[in-house]
Image 1: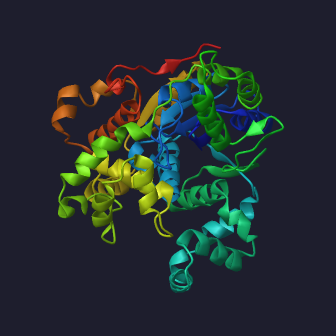
Image 2: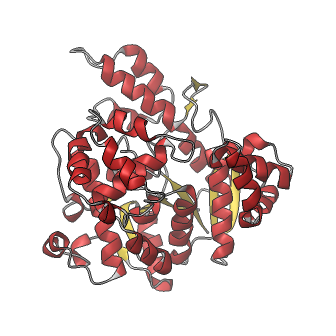
Length: 416
C-alpha cells in the first residue's frame, strides 16, 4: 500500500516529520510514501528557503521514499490549481492508494460535504458581499460556513482550504485514492510563534530572516540556533545554518525592464492578467524596490500572494494559452527529485501500470538548444520548460546564480 502526500517542505520541519510518522503508525512501517512538492517557486509565488533538490533530499532522509516535482504550471497558481495538479500527478502514477493531508479540521465527512458545494450557485451572494466592501477571501468563508454549519474560522485556515480542494480534485478525477485527514499539530500555517517543538514554515522562514539581519562575524546567534534546533530535524538544521538565501528583490530590475518595454496588449496575454491590471503594473514599475512595487498594488481583490504569482508569470511569459493547454492535458510527467531503495521499487511499480513518464534526466525530453530557442513541440516539453524557468528565477535570486541546473542535476539517492 502506498500513501501520497502533497507538500512544499519549505522547509522540512517537525510537523512534516510528525505527519510521516503518523502515516507509518496508521498503515505500517513498510507502507510506501510518495510526496510531490513545488519546485523553483512556491504556491504563494515566493522563493523557497532551499532549492527543490535540497528540500526533496531532506524529505527522503526523514522517511519519504520518493519525491516528485509538482509541475510549476500547477504549483505556482492558486490553491485550487495547486491541489488539482498534485492530486492529478498522484492519481496518474496508478499506484497510490490514499492521499494523506494535515488540517486543523480533520473531519473527512464534513470536508467532503464542503467539497461538494457548487460555489457558482452562490455567486450572487458573494458578489453582494464584495460590493459591501468585503474581499472574496473574506466573503467565501462566511458563505461556506452558512451552508455547512462549520465554524467560519475553519474556512480561513490554508490547510483546511487545501484539504477541501484535494477532495474536490479526487471527485473530479473519479480517483480511487482515499482522502485521509490528520490533525495538524502545533501552530497554524501562518502563525509566527514557536512552541512545544513545533513551528509553521512561516515562523521558521521569519526566524531565518531575522538570523540573516542579525548575522555577525560570529555567525547566527546562539538563541536563534536553539530556537531553530527545537522545531526542525537535525538534517534541516544543518542546511539552514549554512544557508545562502535566495532574494527575490534581485529580480526587480529585470521586472522593471520587462514592464517598461512591453505594450499593454502583450501584457494582457499573461495568465491571470485581468481588469486592466497591466496598466497598474506598468505605472507601479517606477517604485524603487520590489517590496514597494508589490505594496502599491495590494487591494482587497489583489492580495500579496496573487501579486507575487503575477510577477512570476510576467517574468516567464506564462500566457493564458499555455495555462489553458495544461488544464486540458493535466500533468504530463513525474519529475523525480529524490528517492531511496523503497522509492526505486515504487518507480518500477509505476512503470508497469502507468503511461505517465518518470523524468530522471531532463535532456532526454528537452535539450538545452531547444530550451534556449523555445523549440517545444509537445505539452510535456512546454510544461518542463516552465519548471526549468521557475528554477532559474530561484537561482537569479542567489548571489551566484547557477542557471539551467535542471540539465545537470541528478535525483538525490538516499541509502538507509
